[in-house]
Length: 447
Image (cartoon, rainbow, N blue to C red):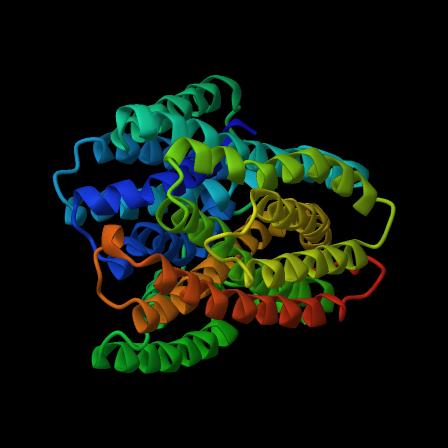
């Protein structure tokens, strides 16, 4: 719970600070998107490998190591002299995040009986959203008063608390049975193929090389999947995807997070650059979304133990799509009430989607596969955000161009938003179609 809060507090507070970081380092509007992308790419790339390693050697040691790495890299970010060094430490934070999110859901679910799975997942996700709620307000206030580096000081303190609690309270695992070996060939193939695919996707249309990297990544992914089908110790258990509840839930996760990732990122820049609000005031406005998510997630989690998780998740994605359509009509005179209404609707949608969808994913596998299932879910979530940010970067590059973030014209930013939000609403609708394909009953995967 503490780890969930700390990691999302770090992400949401940093969103508010992005315009200030870009201004100090004289970065362009396209370049500052890498503050988010560098973290997401590495986190998505390594979640599945760490999930597999954790299932073999122990989830708790991987989680503790991830918290330590995240803590140290956040501390080092305080002293970043330029954007290159800053992004290097963001990459290290992505590694730590992959280790954390490949294990924490598995540890949590393994500690509770199946009939309470939805409830505990809802509580854990509520901790995520509380971190999101505190981030914009606290991060905005301290960025406005003390500068963006103070955000990393506070993040370091929170993560340090999580590290101490993990070391003191989290017991060591007793590994039983025959220990499998890590399939090094599969891990290397996965990292190369998936890494090339995501990097090519993230830089798509920015240069000619990106097309070749993307195409090579697709070819390598095909080679990787053929290898996984033949190997005795795969990194990704292909049999998990034979279950429609698992596979469609993962696809729903991918499309939902691809659709909503732009909300906080774009609105943070919109409120500060197009509307002229200070960082602390922008944070106060944006807190409405995660507050609703935090309040409703335990409720929807308990509800998913009794009602169809697929129906609840699909309903949530419908709310998100409606909110994205609302944001497409923002301009320089839009009322604060209208903006907050859109954020509240997004919060309701995410709360109805996240807990039931997570419950359905973890409920469709056996406990020995919790680590793999959690890491696949984490990868789908992060890959969705990478896809969303890649789409957004392409639009920003086309509409705004290589302009310093502090010099972006409000009219150009709003034009980019009017193109972006309808596209993301369409992505969300595709996710709804996948979500509705799931069965009403919880189909379980067995070996």
